[in-house]
Image (cartoon, rainbow over all chains, first blue to last red; front, side):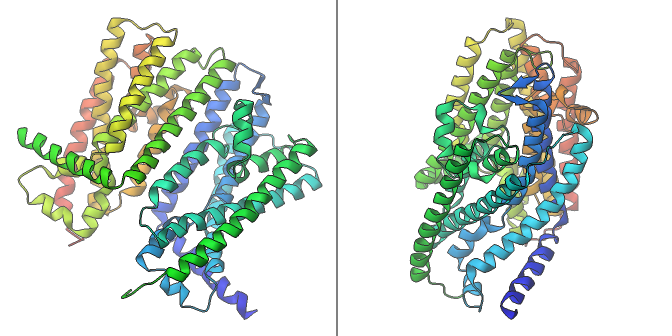
Length: 266
Length: 261
């Protein structure tokens, strides 16, 4: 029990820290709200003269945008953007010297951030629901179970990718550029602005081989029951493959990074 | 004026040297911007293929709104990148050194470090934009084009005013990052005609945070479509926003307490 107690304290502290700069937090959430509002408005206008677009009905698309904003608040919320800088500056020594698992510590901080974002997303979703009246059809119990499982995979996958970016800090202070490139890919391939299946088939097939669609697009397709059994198995296998591969790669890189890590006069 | 040009040239050259030091980093940034533009255009083309109209506009006309946003956003990034570094100037106390120099601190804070990456990117992106526009079936006349150029200049004035307001907030609170990204996200709403948004957001985006005046009105004028706001009012908004933001800047300097140093 005492093993988990320290993580619980970290969770509480991180939650409190996250609420210290309330204006920054409100601005961040307002930006997310405006982004979702823009997507919903664009799609609503596009559907105003059309019953079906890109094989989606209006209600399906509105539900899609609602779900994607909720899921991305959960999966993509992270406090690990500064991890590489913390490693390069030596700030991470503070945690390495404490009787706490570093990855467990980072995961707990991430979890607190996700909780905070989910609460705000629920409030935002209620406001947007009053405006756009989405009709979200709940999936069957089995589909819901698979949906929850795929969310878990998305969360782990994103955490591993953040660790991978963080590990750059062991060797270089230049971390913003690869992260920027990643964010650009993510913006268009995770499905926030549009579902991936509106893209040409060839582009779709390539993107589905990367980890990006498994940060929200895949989960929503499961929720909306838009996948055949074969597609579900293939995408599930691909996401699990990425999770295993990244776990191995991240493990090896961090082991090497920690071995060569040194900090003085921090 | 010559002194200002000389200083800008020096800071631009410094930024260029920095770019050459971090070649790989800048290449990744450039690649990211190319991907963003390519994907945005791809999505617009897919939408174009599916829609017959968007509000009262043809799908071809919608492309103009996006390209106008893209150009103004890119240009203001090139010139006003210094704003992004302003909070660190205030927090570290370095801003004090700008205040005692015989050159406008506003000029230095705004244009502190021109974005070389965006400066390079604006060349191919503008060429692509011009090519795309030449391929689209649009009702563009010489008069509408000349008005468009004038309104683009007006949009740049508004962008300047908005960046000055961000600096004002920076002087008063030492916090710039959240505000500047908020501004960027608000301007992103101008990728599509702002009159698509519901009230009161539409009015806010035309008059309070004049995103519509910056992007929607010039595009409407170019394609000879009736605008929500007359051109005279649009130009007045541009000029007055600059005057108001400059007055606020002067006022904020009086409130500056040099916390950093």
